[in-house]
Length: 318
Image (cartoon, rainbow, N blue to C red; front, side, top):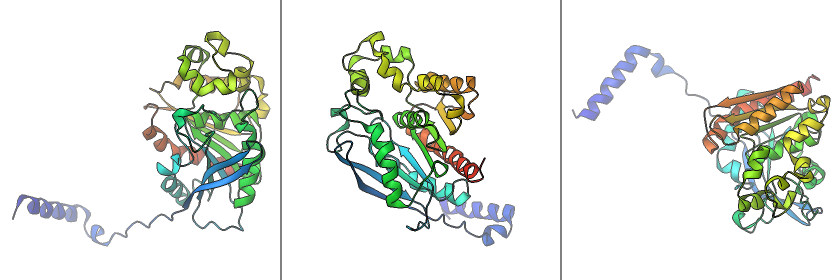
């Protein structure tokens, strides 16, 4: 008998001795019911003058006539509407629903690129904000057109109690921006490694990096302290917390999770401290990790659980 066969025989014998008959009679785990992901969907936007592309996750057992809760899941700086589906959103959501931590929920993943036909590196980012000159009003489009449009089309959401938003990095910035700026529009909002920079980090950004990310929203060619202008203050998450009444902010449940080695950790901690200072209920997690997909996919189950809890509490009238 060769070494591999001997090892297999020995291993089987040991397992049988330790586990007895349960190893032979154990019932295989039931497969987790799978939802369905649809990509390449489009919604016409009059505000933008173009179609907005989005992907969709439909939970197991989805029926057009049944109104499900909805989660808007926003992508990061170099992503698009296919980012989350390509990195495991479907199976993660399937398991959350099967475990009961998340009710059967429709997940909408919009494309935040200005032009889906051009490479990301060749066009300015939106960061889910409106342009300073009003030429491309992405944030306005989301609130006025995307939310009511997709919810009517897919039988989802319909009220704040059945609506949540979240995202990672730039998507986390967008999610909190929509939640902070529209109190009561969402029952829950989460950000994984939120792309929120401190004032010092904004002023220190190399010019090309600043212009690519923020020039269309705050102004092109700005240097140093000039970047911290009124448009910046209007969209800055920390400033939004400061000027918004605590009672209004508290209409949404917040969940923040940022890696302890992430360059955005200081900015995320500032958001946590600002919410704490105003006694706004929220959860803030800091785990070992950096600004990377392994961190976000490992953190998504807890974020979905927080969304599920918010849905349940809203349904119970708490």
